[in-house]
Length: 267
Image (cartoon, rainbow, N blue to C red; front, side, top):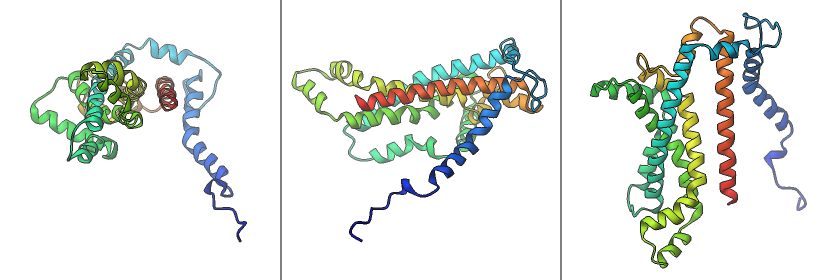
């Protein structure tokens, strides 16, 4: 038995077939949705030819444009705010002089990743109601910022750990003050991770539904919430078209984040 090969789970018989079936199960509905977004028929399940008319209808719908505008504005503000907070938090956790509570602080920041989003949405609504805050878009910006912080923080924190402190110590040996050290050494090295975190935060905010549904008010409806309202009358070709646009935007941004993250590791 000395010549027996060690067990390798990647060579399990049938693993590739099972994996392919699982991916098919998850992604076939998305593929069907995208295909029928180009269906010229008003009936969703009856193919009547290829057409872009539902995308044109979506572009000409003023209510959809307003909802998309709200989503983009909220996502931009939440991305900028959450990325700035995440960058400061990651530096404090990895370069700060905290002796106690570092693990608890990290766990608290990452809690939105673990707690079900419906719980976060309900507690956020209760919090705003308790304070008497009913400011529409401003409430959504705050809620999305808090929710997006861990998505922006994780790649920045990982980059700081990979960097180590050698280059920063070298800068201190050359008599650089902390601000110049951050501006000339730490920040340029962190930029790929900050960019990846910002992209992830933008996508999470843009696609968020539960928090937006709970916190939004009249005049602050986001695109996912508006799509849910359209779904009450059943799936229509316009819903397929909007969903396809959101899916395409999400794929582009997530792919960009992955490429930046891979480049960050290679660097």
